[in-house]
Image 1 (cartoon, rainbow, N blue to C red):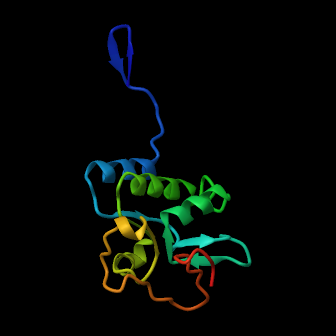
Image 2: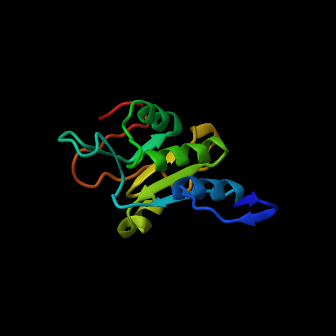
Image 3: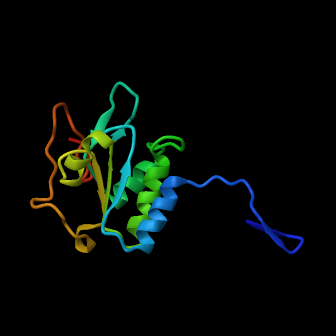
Length: 146
């Protein structure tokens, strides 16, 4: 909306759905921000021969990977940026998963979870771990890849 000649008029605009979702979750003090996307989870080296799924990330690890260019714009980048905004504002848990595995992802058994540092987060699932489902997984909670 713009004011032109004393009147309010509509204009064309693009709204980033990931940032808006993050903003809404922050304003609602939501305990969880969920991104439903086309892939089952976030990947390290996505689309390359050495691609590996990321089950969990801390806020700091997600920021480091983003800074290193691991999550480009037009791909997972906007979701990671929105997740970081939510977590930096006090949110505790972000889940990124495809629609077909949302139930498992919400229960901590699929998808990717990004969380705030342990001292400030609320753990929703007993044990706080995800099960590895086939293939090699990169676990980053210790700061490195397995």
